[in-house]
Amino acid sequence: MTELMLHPDRLLPSETSTREIARRLYNEVKDLPIISPHGHTDPEWFANNEPFGDAAELLIRPDHYVFRMLYSQGIALESLGVPTTDGTPVETDPRKIWRTFANNYWLFRGTPSRMWLDYVFKVVFGLNKVLTKDTAEEYFDTITDSLQKPEFYPRALFEKYRIETLATTESPLDDLRHHKKIRESGWQGNVITAYRPDPVVDPEFEGFVENIEELGSLTGEDTATWAGYLAALRNRREYFKSMGATSTDHGHPTAITADLTLADCKALYSKALTGHCSAAEAEIFRGQMLTEMAAMSIEDGLVMQIHPGSFRNHNPQVFAKFGRDKGADIPSQTEYVNALKPLLDKFGNDTRLSIILFTLDETVYSRELAPLAGHYPTLKLGPSWWFHDSPEGMRRFREQITETAGFYNTVGFNDDTRAFLSIPARHDVARRMDCGFLAQLVAEHRIREDEARDVALDLSYNLVKRAYKLD
Image 1: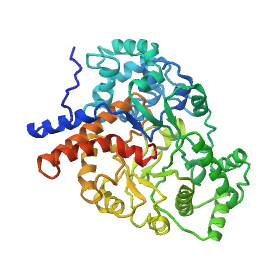
Image 2 (image 1 turned 135 degrees about the vertical axis):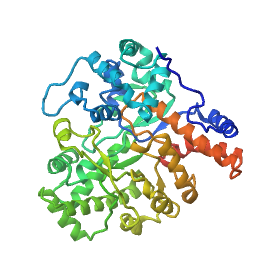
Image 3 (image 1 turned 90 degrees about the horizontal axis):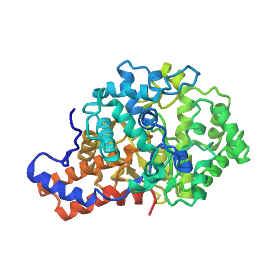
Image 4 (image 1 turned 30 degrees about the vertical axis):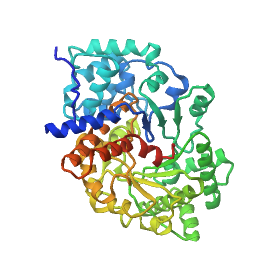
């Protein structure tokens, strides 16, 4: 059996003297608390604090990084126990699901998922052999048996990982019952929500018209009118703030914003409520709603996150059978300079507004995003995200952003994950990569080591607290 090893210098520079600097910097930040301000873990885990059922339920079913790779190799999602929306039966034997995963674990060689999973196997569960078909049973039994112990319950793991704050993401239609239960439980773990209005601001979102009706019922506002609709959105934002929210989250297809007249807003909203908006009209409506959300953020102080550029549910057969978030969201080319101009013309110089921009299009790092964030006081840049939250993605981000935007127009790291146990692994990768980048600057005599140490602390901890108003 091959030993499972996590090299202490993994991801640090290979050049000896630079690696020594990176080691010193990493030792300063490796044990800092984790702040996870943007993610998709399930708040019910922490509300009920019940044990995770088994290895497959914990590590395969919720993680589209895992099952999209397997699906790409012809392995059916049904065989991995991914639930269907049409009632089609799926595999329910967790041991069989795990065997399928283990038999194909070699597919993850060289990927970030492999690093994160090996970290979990070694650090969290103490496994010492590489996962293969021959060790599958040992892995399944060790992980599943461990999960029944109190020290592996969700709240205990939260504390073990030194998670200071974790934000989940919910629709305005969510009643936030799990967040309410967490607050009333007396547990001191800081699990907060983030306001994700996509289902009620995107005319192309499935069930949009019905969602608007439900929004009206929840808030007591007349959402058949433009004024009542905006009032309902403000109402829900206020409720989310009462449940700890400090941010909003907007996953639009593009970064387009708009600044329409009141008459045009009313007319376009009326058209959207018919369910017959054209694609162009839906795009303008979403753009107008980003500007409306920015105005509301000036009023209530919620930080605004915009992460466009994903062609959602690119595989219609998978979407029809399994629903959203099943690994078929594909990055697309994204433009920011002209797209954001209507919003920035109106609010770009207002220091009461804080917008964090993300991208899946790396070609805009130095051409668009860094110059925008390097000028407008409202803008900060989110970290490498999703397909680019990898060592190479993180390196490219720092190399292309820093020369124009610096470090202090960025917001540290967030893990954007549904897979709870990957959170410390992801943050460890980010800290190692940032320390390696800073060590290179020190070795080239571009900054002093004491400055690099300060920046490492900021990138790992301070910037994210400040950007998301958690301090």
